[in-house]
Length: 95
Image (cartoon, rainbow, N blue to C red; front, top):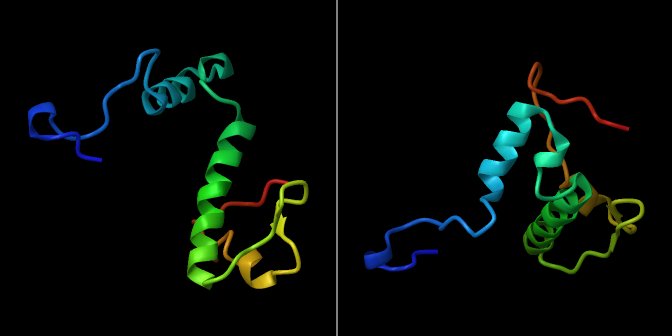
């Protein structure tokens, strides 16, 4: 979003900190108490964006099961949650 020429470009830090900066600081300090949101909150936020992209690319509605973290009966949509990475850049799956 562009707030206008007189305000400059880019996002403005919000009162109480900036999530991006706070996240980097928490990674550097290795203190979970410095993060503004839990891992679960971040996962939910990102999942919504991924689901919207998957639905858009498939051109149809997808039905997501948050408990199992997959699209119900839709292998095509489920495959779109991940990519095939070449070694050594592949990350191992966390179970």
